[in-house]
Picture 1 (cartoon, helix red, strand yellow):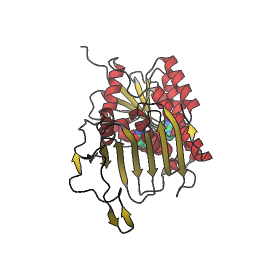
Picture 2 (cartoon, rainbow, N blue to C red):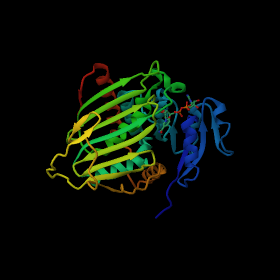
Picture 3 (tube, rainbow, N blue to C red):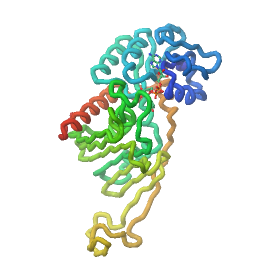
Picture 4 (cartoon, helix red, strand yellow):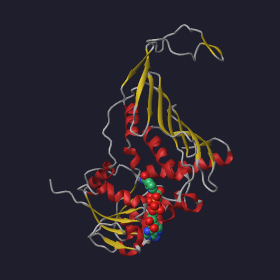
Length: 351
Ligand SMILES: NC(=O)c1ccc[n+]([C@@H]2O[C@H](COP(=O)([O-])OP(=O)(O)OC[C@H]3O[C@@H](n4cnc5c(N)ncnc54)[C@H](O)[C@@H]3O)[C@@H](O)[C@H]2O)c1
């Protein structure tokens, strides 16, 4: 097999995420970082020797050897720079959220197609360990027929930072982490969506959302819930998948958790009355000893670098891009529906 073409990379926007990319890609042989661009030269003071530096993105796009750029500038600039890069013949990996609107994104897709370049979005959280474990639970039907999936992310640092506090910059948590959590859920559940209901709040941020809860009814009868709050003051990353054959739970980004099953599954168990401090209950007392048992969650291989392994394979015609533009578009449409539901306090039909 001929040697694979490398991703000859330029990074446009060298702030938090630009640095993350440079650090993560340092050890990946499939990438060579040729140039970095940031309109604030201070951001590039730590760039390694030998890497070209630019302050104007038009200039980095003139570097012949670059075949791909990462666009990691604030959200309102994604469209302009993606289109300019495509017109310069560069493949584009754009940061999420891909665009400020579906219309913007459609234009990005149209131009990148016309220019014949690869275009994808950095939804690398599809390679998060906790997500991949739960996707495996879902794909393998490890808890039988599923009725509920919950994805929760709670934080303590309520205030957003820098440009993320401004609406016109595409700030707020729906655009920030929300887009990842939505992308994961839509990627996991292989069904159309019937309805979306969302509550969104600015708890302590003035302009932008820092809390949301989204309830999604999928056409295959699965209900899912995505909840995020930056001001929960009880940090947590958690998943729950409830199926007729058990419950799968994860707490923590590293995917610690278990599957819990019951020996009396689907049997008619005579109700035993338990007395609680709030009175008697048959359904909500502690389980009888031996009723429940635990199993390990599936083991998965999880590495964010696989996003770029896939991109390099796509560059060499060996694989399709894992993150497809129609999936990204669906996430953007979904976010519009979330805003509509939250704004009207009504359930929105989708698909
Ligand atoms: N995929 C992820 O997990 C993830 C995580 C964080 C941020 N992001 C995304 O990455 C993008 C950047 O976010 P960030 O947190 O790194 O922001 P940041 O503010 O830390 O970095 C943005 C950089 O872009 C530079 N910049 C602004 N305008 C420019 C221009 N015209 N030309 C060149 N450079 C310019 C700024 O000087 C800054 O250094 C956003 O779209 C954000 O949503 C993605």
